[in-house]
Length: 141
Image (cartoon, rainbow, N blue to C red; front, side):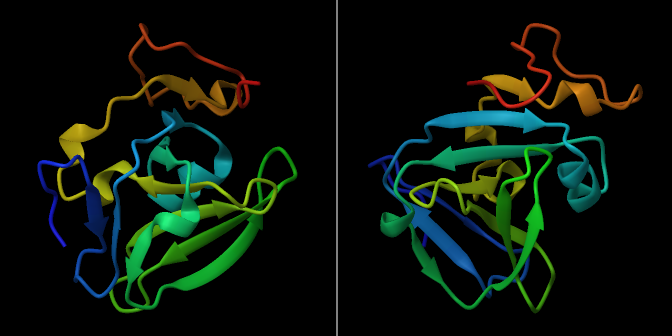
């Protein structure tokens, strides 16, 4: 799968065993400083594109899943490649129609345009973000 002129977003893991594609535009793009994103990324935040139609996200390959309670208490289902370990997507039990992908997993990561910073309450002093981004202590309403 590759991106085409139709606006398809494509990406996947580092080894190519898990790939995804969607023709939908993201409904939200954010940097998240929650503790879960910090642990998963090994840095001070995660960067995500959230898409509106999980059922229409084509996924090729078998990802391994694990669940964790978010700072909000809601359940998040993380998917990663069982071969190389790369995070490839994230689902939300409370919002099953949505699916999010890490910005760096895109074939063209430059398409990520952050709209907000979430969970700023968990910000680490060494993880400086763009001060022009709207910042929320938690997830915006």
